[in-house]
Image 1 (cartoon, rainbow, N blue to C red):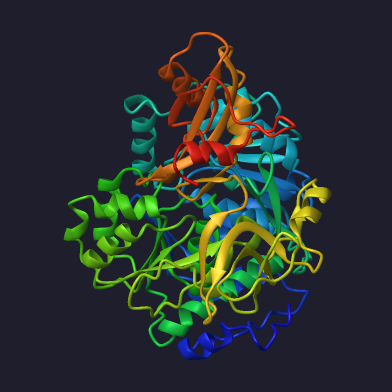
Image 2: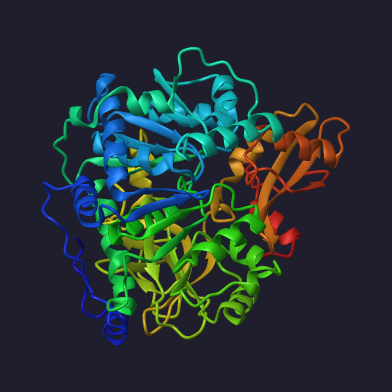
Length: 565
C-alpha cells in the first residue's frame, strides 16, 4: 500500500468525519474465499438475496456456489481459467459468480445486452473456457462468429431458482407470452439445473489462492481503443471492500445491521454494482434485493415499497427516473440510511429532487473499472449534495498532474491519478497499454481532469479522454465510428457525447455521406450492431469532418460545433 504524505489536505477531513486513514489488509496467503466462508458461517440462515419474491439464505448460497465450483472443477478447468457470466440480476448470478471464484477461476463479467460482435471480442480477448448465459441471450452467443476458447456452455432460465411452480410459470410467460427468448440452437450446452446438480458440494476442492491471484476480469472502454479487461486481484477486491466498509462504518457503526437491505437495481456485471451491492453487501451480511429489469420503474418501485431498502446505490439515470415517477414519492423512506451515487455525475437538479422526496442527500463517489472501482467518496454524513466526488478512499493517494506529469497546485486543473491497493494489476493481453496508463511514479492515470480544494475534496471538471459516459457505462467513440462506417452509405463519421438529462450523455454521430441515407436508417443500423447504450441517439450530416494535419478527426472541434467547448 502507498505511504500517504503527511501534508495531503484530505487527512484532516478523515479526522473531522471519523474516517480511518488506512485499512488493515489481511495476510497475503488469504483471498476472497476466506471472506465468503466467514460470512456463510456468520449469517447462515439469514436471507442473502431476494429476487421476484423468491429468496436464498447465506447457507444455501454456500452450498449452491460450492456445487457450481465442483461442477467447473469436474470439467477439468483449473485455477486461473476464465469463465464468463452473461446474465442480469437474478439469483443465479451470485451463485455462479461465487462458484467461479471459489473454484480458483477468474470471473469474466459480460453485459447480457451485448451484440454478437461485441461478445465475440470479449470471448476472444478473455480466453474464457466456459460461459453461463441466460437463454434470452443464447441466440447472441450462437451468432458470435468468434467464440474464442469456450468449450462449455451452461444455459440458464430466468425461473430456474424461483421454485418449481413459480419458476415454470415465469419461464412459460417469458417464452410464449412476452416472446423474450429468440429461438436458438446450442446442441452441446448444459442446463443450469443440470450443472447445479451434476456434482455434490462435498466434491469441492478448495484451491490455494493468495491476494495476488486474479479474481475478476472487468471489461472497460479504458482510455483508448476497444474494450479491455482490467485484471482485478483478490487483493484489489478485498481492499476495496474494506475501504467501502470504513466509509459506511464512519457514519453507521452503531447502526449497521445484517437486517439491512441493499437495493441491487444496477446490473451486477457493472463493477460499481458488483462491488458495492454484491461483494460489500455480502461482507456486511445485507440482503441484496435483485432487480432483473430496472427499466420497469413501476415494478422497481413496487419492490422498494415491499422491502424498504436501507441503501440505494444508483446512477443519475435511475435517480432521475425514480424522482419523475409519481409513485416513488408515495414510498416509506423511514428505513433509508444512504443513497449512493456513482458511475456517472449526478445532476444537481436530480439530487435536489431526490433530497426533497426522500429527506436524504445523494452521497456521490468516484471510481473506475481499473480501481475495483472506488477511488474517492463524500462522507456519508454530509447534509447536502456537494457536486464533488469527495476525498480519496482510505489508504489511497491521489495526485493531480499536468501533461509533463508534474503535480499541480491546490485549486489548479490536473489529471486525476491514483495509487492504492484497489488499483488493477493491468490490462489483459495489453502490456503496452498498461504501461501507458501509469505514470513514471506508479500512479494510474484516470483521464479525468479535476480540481482539488484546500480540504482535499475533488471536483471533476473535464475529461482528457474522449470517452462518452452513458448511464455510468464507458463508451469509446472509436468503436461507434468503426461499426457505423461499415454502413455502405457512410463515408466517414465522428462520435462525441452530448448532454442528456436522462442518461448523462448520449452518443451523437457526425456523418459524411457516401450515398443517400436517412437519419432513421442510420439510427436503426446502430440499434442492430451496437448495445443499447452505445448506439448513436443523434445523427448530423456534414460535408466534412474537422481533422488534424495528419488526418485525425478532431472531436474537440465537433464538441465546439455543439457548443460544448
